Length: 329
Image (cartoon, rainbow, N blue to C red; front, side, top):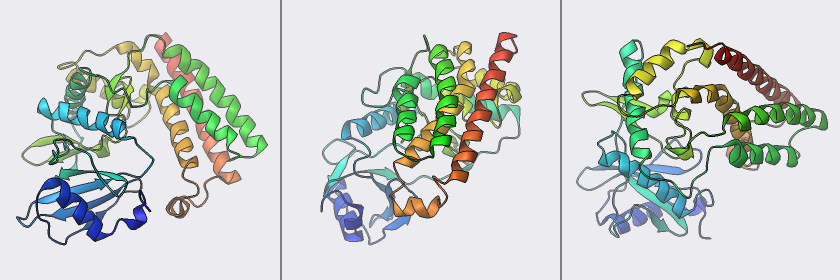
């Protein structure tokens, strides 16, 4: 059956990559950790190490993957340190084998960045500013638009309509998420969206000794507000990290303009991310691997805990609104 990971044998992997790269591989097909996709380290007969990523069937259309690759290649063109897909023999970056889309990347590794100085935060800001400068030069027409109307509201409806929680819990969930959406819709008015990384937390920024910082994993790139790629770097809520925010923006604004008014979105975006993750999980509940990793997902205790977290985040939004109203730096 086409488009099925179960049929992705080592021989299939090697055949697929050799056919589009025009090179001969050894027998190495070492699987790497990835829940969504299937990722393997390969080796050419000339000792070149490669990473082959086979995308989960049905998750992305080819056009959406192309948007991601175009963004990464634009960053690479601007000499931003990213891991760009290799060009295949047909001149593109996306291959297909037995109904499964895949791409090939050079193997690059690094270590987690050591953030113990103000200059480290400025470096992070500079890197994100460069990414956004490249991102603002084009659009991703086939990617999600990170806006409460196009993401959060459908995600809430998915959770409420799927029978994942009891009537009592669904009532609490609907009430608190409605309050968050009301604020989010108001605060998103007039906010510009552009190509951003979308999942720019510190684990996706590596330090390469002797080279500097490198950004990885553009899988979740979206058209979104630039502040999304900033708040994910913060160690705490916005009202507790004003110093880090200022340092990030010092570095950022060396390359890109930043609309300070969008800082009011930080805690709203944090709530939207919580809802997004719950919605994504709800689409995975029949997957055996998901059930193993999240054995209590969907239980009464689970929803009690998650809704309490959302209610706590709602109060963080209100608190942040009061701070911004008082003109806190």
